[in-house]
Image (cartoon, rainbow, N blue to C red; front, side):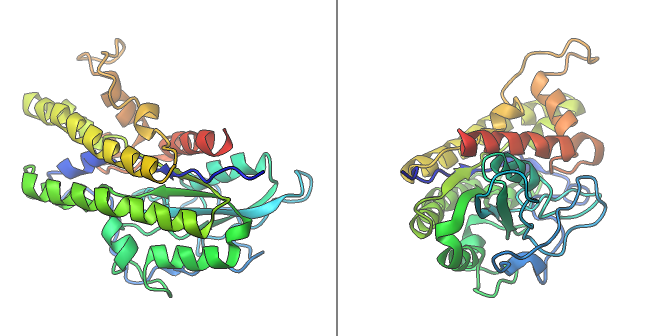
Length: 321
């Protein structure tokens, strides 16, 4: 008996809205993308060799070969979609479609199905709008969603799991002027609220027996806490905005009978308890952000290797429950 598909929406880093130093800070877009080499789905059985975490170069293709013989006989696909977090982006190495959190999830799936293969067609800078309509990365089928549906039409009966991380880039431009543009924010959140259920519904229809998981987002703007009273006020304000975005993601998941991978909880984004061993009584959520992302070290919102491992664990818990 097959389980109903469940969707994990990757942690949406709403705090990216408050990246108020555009000359220094990297947003969720990563570098401009003229041609997304990973957009083409690999043929069944194609091998792209797993890249080790910490590698300085990104893989050329998103597909990963099946695990060597010895761990089960079950085969199938794990499909990953989304923005630069789903693409495993880090500022010191670019995107890593077989790394990031994808390899952690793939490893967990292979515990029960040893020959599961990875197809990651994520696009740095993708929004919910461009995921549906195209325009950010080049895909043979026009958009990331259409490319995913094309893959699922060919492999849907063998797709075991799908993970989605999308939505933060729909609101990030609302703060690039140095203050929160409320009108822009309302519009961006409305786009996520309207379109994310459509994305998840289309994936479910194309792969009715797959497990689907959607991640929510941690809050990178908490790093502003370290910049004095004004920064602390902004960090506190961003917590409410993060909750609003993540609530929209949860609602979209519920509408598609999907599950949410709670990345915000894994990063302790709401925990204001002071950390005793850090000078200045820094809240736990700020200390965790500095530990798990590049925000405090390089003013870049993306997760570091440890942070991606934690995201992968949050997704894997939902996919393997």
